[in-house]
Image: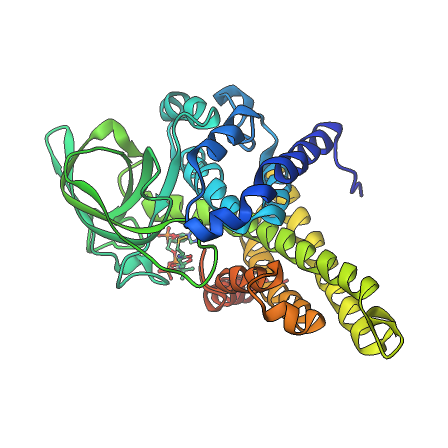
Length: 383
Ligand code: COS
């Protein structure tokens, strides 16, 4: 068993850490206030070579796999969750859907520009009546000659307004639905009939845009179809396996940040003539958070290793997402408690971390869905 990061991965982590300290932390409050991750920040992520971290070298990326992606996600989240999520919509589920579902020709066509950050990706699966159950989606595509005509609406799409190329999952056979009835398409920004609608006002991660996308007779050439007709559900799920793992890394970064601030505060503030951390009640909270963080970290990177060594990791990714998001909730809740009134004040970052954390139990599949995925697999294969 070898838990050492390779030299390349250590360099990558340090690069992401420095980037976070120099470029993200100083902007984080403004990103939250303005509800926007500046495009120049995304361009800088591309300039330093982070946008293609998990894209294989033969397609123009760094080839550092899901382990590399998780390291970057963890570090960026420490600076600002919304920036990391905006990055992830592209580098994780956007680009990875092309890697998971694209033909060799499509990967060579799209991934180099995605790696370079010239084409930002996004992923559009959810609909108003099809969130946990994407097999119930109503957006359709009908073949017309060498083109497909798309109609419908997607909701809760991260970065749908800034992406250049959105992976959109649509129904092409209502009889088959999740079992061969869904097909994936790459829809370019600016396609006629493709519009961005309402932007959600959210509790947390406010800098990350979450929008509705509408498709009205959008004509897409057949070479923009990702993978085979009917393969869309499997592409969506295979991509989400990776997205859930990357989200565990987000949870890890946010938990580490909240914990580090709590430790600092417990070492500095005094009550009843001694440091806060010397009170057993506070020390035990810090100990419980340290245990939660150690468990998130272990699960996240073990699952990334499974993925990178081409082993099955679907169940483990669901377990990591489930555990990481619930453990994060415990960590940020303790952080608020340790900081007392300071933890509840919007002048201090703990309150933001608390709000940013809550959605992790909901997106990339609710935790109830993760339990369903895990239970089905355990019943089928045992542990
Ligand atoms: N990778 C590849 N294929 C997968 C897969 C995965 N992780 N999970 C399921 N599939 C395949 C199945 O093997 C099945 O294939 P066949 O048609 O050959 O039988 C097909 O996909 C349908 O799977 P299943 O029968 O399990 O579909 P269900 O409709 O029961 O849905 C759940 C399964 C609930 C797990 C799925 O709908 C889900 O994950 N929902 C949550 C969606 C979500 O996370 N949304 C978040 C928004 S996107 S950020």
